[in-house]
Image (cartoon, rainbow, N blue to C red):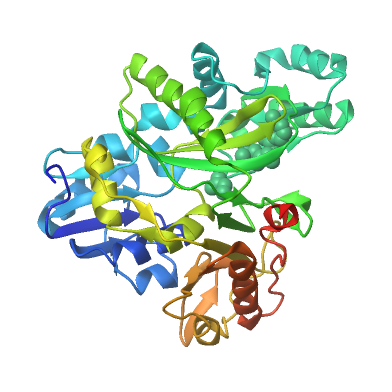
Length: 442
Ligand code: AMP
Ligand code: GLY
């Protein structure tokens, strides 16, 4: 099929975490992969799969990075994290037809990096989402008045990127008032919180629907569910994600068609009307309310840890699919998922989601991996790790994403949990109930 990836495609994968390890793991299975270069800050797992890029990915180093890319004949850059997209990495490095970047330019990334603007786009396109109002630092009193006068609970969000920490789900007006003051008055999130969005608190099940978008064609991936709270039974503070599974039966086939029709298509069309060719992952964080699916947020990249669960079941040539997304030839891609379910259990360091304990050697990785088999694969994706003198050591809050696949979710979750139990370092913990909402439904 024309429009696909070149035969020997050298790739630079930007991003250093669990999502990128899972992407690298699947990319390594592509027959078209030439050299795989990974982020200069890559975790120990990523570094075992590719060579570390010797150039900084900082915007100010673009000139040297480009020269290095020319020398190494990099044909595809895959951008994992939102921060790099917001910095305009895709605008700077996309040089079709020779070199493509998977990931939207700054203008498209704004859907995630500017929630206030995202709400405007959604409203203009009639995409179902929570009712909201936007306030800036000059409107502190109006924002306080607004939260005091509302009878129903609200959610207060910093408009900019806050690494998942900018959302406060409030039960009472007093909490909402405190959140408003934290952001607008105390500048808790700096400029990322200079504008806030206050929205109605929606109720229902949360589902993540990720789609590849090549500017025009939309290819929905299997629906996932993330577990954001640190504690079992979805209790305690929010985290970057304690586990995910795929597919989730909470998103039925008719519901997914509705999401495509009412949410993804109108959003991509609205972006086009703004002159934005969105190429990359459009990730819709949805609440399944009584009134139908509504957008909680858009991300413009692969989710973490959803990607670990998705890559475990990805069939076919990932490199070709990413290339086609970047090239605008996605309609020729062959994308499929292996049958059954996958489940990712995130093993965290003591203290997370606060300041985590780091620097501990990770034991039991080989034992955990040995639980995998050809029919029921299992992988220990690294997240916050780095190479130590005698093997990987912990280097972040979310340390590993133990990901298993099996004929059904109950077994995938059981196997991922069993493998997570083999991992030993002081203070390690993980949730044993990933997938519980789907399992309770059976
Ligand atoms: P976000 O960082 O935007 O994904 O938000 C983090 C979490 O806050 C989401 O996963 C939801 O659990 C919750 N959340 C965000 N917006 C709302 C809303 N309007 N109603 C209820 N919960 C929300
Ligand atoms: N899993 C949530 C995120 O990637 O933002």
